[in-house]
Structures are given as C-alpha cells and as structure tokens.
Amino acid sequence: MLKGTLGIVAVIVLALIAAVLSWSTVLAIADEGDWKTIKLSPWAQVDVERVFYKKLHNDAFFIHVRVKNLTEHTVVIDVNNRYSVFYPNQWVESKVPRRDSIDERRMNQANTAPWEKFKLEFDLPGSTRIAAGKAFDYFISFNGGSWNGIQQSKLPYIIMVMDGHLTLTDGKTVELIKRDQNDLNGTEVPFRAPVRWATVPASAKVFE
Image (tube, rainbow, N blue to C red; front, side):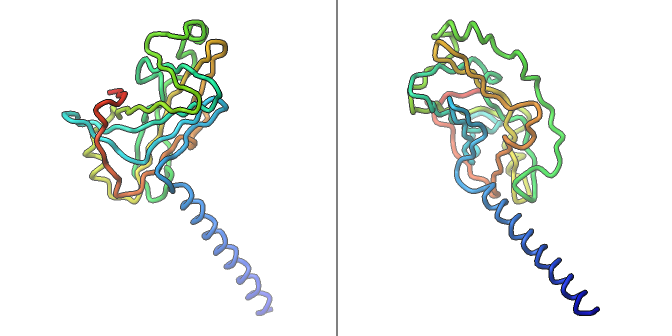
C-alpha cells in the first residue's frame, strides 16, 4: 500500500516539475528578442520594438512600430492620424510577461475607414507608400500618462497592449489588418525591467 502511494506521489511530483519547466519555457519565449510581432498577414507584418522612447519637451512616452510590406509590389498605407494605425492602448505592471487580469477599454474598430475611397484614390492625402520588401516606421505616444509612471514600476515586466488597425491598398484591393474584438492577448508586448529608453529620431513619423 505504501509503495503504491509513493508511486502516485512520485508521478504527481514529476508532472508538476514538467509543468513548471514547460511554463518557464513559454515565459522565456514570450519576452525574448528586441521586437514583438503583433500582427501578421499576407500583406504586412507589424512589429513593436521593446524600447520606450522620449521626445524633447514632451512628458509622454512613445512606442516604435514597424510595418513591413510582405508583398511583391508597392502598397499604400493610411497614416492620416493616430487612430488609423496601431497605438498603445494600455500598460500594466506584471510579475510575468502577460497581463494577470484584463480590464481594458477599447474603441469600436468597425467602420473606421472609407475602404472603397481608399482603394480608388491610391494617393489619398495622409497616406504613404511602402515599396515591396521595405518597411515604414512610426512612433506613437501613449496619451494616458507620462513616462514617469513607467520609471516608477516595481515589478519585473511592463505589459504594453496595442490596439487599432491598418488599412493598405495596391489600388485594386484593400487589406484591413486589425486587432479583433475578441483578441485579448495577441497584441500584448512584454518589456522586461529595467526597460530601455531612447530618443525619438528627429526625422521620424510621429503621432503625438
């Protein structure tokens, strides 16, 4: 009887150890690398750099987003304002590289751009071209607080949650890349503390 009980206990212990090791691997993978891909489509890849940016005479912090054209032809992207692109919607402190709980408020992403007009007007004001295989970078502020809050964080991770959408066209078809309403974790970007800081380049495309 004792041997049987010890055997069961041993199996349980080994299962727990395996679970811990598996979860540790997941956590290690989740926050590795200088960039985090938040959206991927046949048209474009959207990445966020794991660096916080400051701008002279501005208390806000900025997030660096890169949109890479994955097609074999030039595309046009709508960058008319901060809500026509992906933007930082929320940040939280966390002990692990994900949110412990989700209490995020989001904008309704439905009907946020004039798709047909954008397709027909290839040089729509407020748009920019991305050549095949090239990328477009922009820096966008978090308008719900200052960089000082990030500096005062005490936990191992800052979780930046991106929201929004991108509209691209080749003059014939329109591609909408967005965070779906039921997407809770796909656009989380974990930053390991202490976070890295840099200055927004003077020539950069900036959304304040």
